[in-house]
Length: 209
Image (cartoon, rainbow, N blue to C red; front, side, top):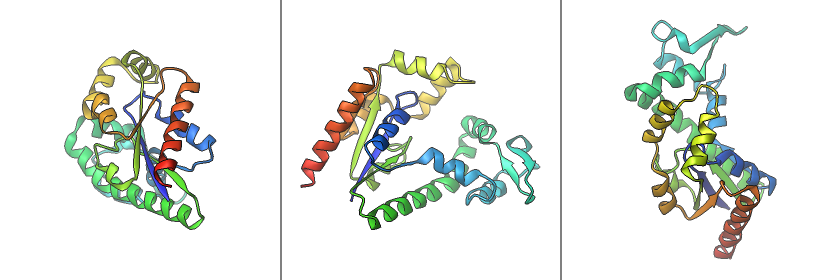
């Protein structure tokens, strides 16, 4: 089975590309969605995060108690804390990254058993975390800086200062493109993006013959 790692800097159109893969009937595992599951009440990461970020010290990241007596974790509030504190960010990553990788391995295993030929792992920080070593091919989505900036600033709660701070935490787009096996442009219209994704898939299949 072939595993493709999909990545791209913030605002580059990664979600659009993931949806295109799914429209081609290629299963996609999204790391962000997995984190949401892990931090939900009863999720595999909720208890560990609760221990690392206790309520008495970080009350702002917790919601009301559920019927089972567990407090829901507010991802946005937790994100604010780790965004401005590298020590706290690394502590959170130490908890979540192994759990996400385990979920990705389960995803691959399940589809391999089912005879799926190609799957995609949508990993925002693919190169930053060494994720390229766990996939067969990498595809980076990219767009002109002006398009990227417009997309990001249209998001709720986003401003220029936060946008620049996020970019500093991510590998530069140019470096990602240089390291990728394939690149798909998302600033030239959906048809062009799909064309480039299909071309990448065709080349991969040709290589694997």
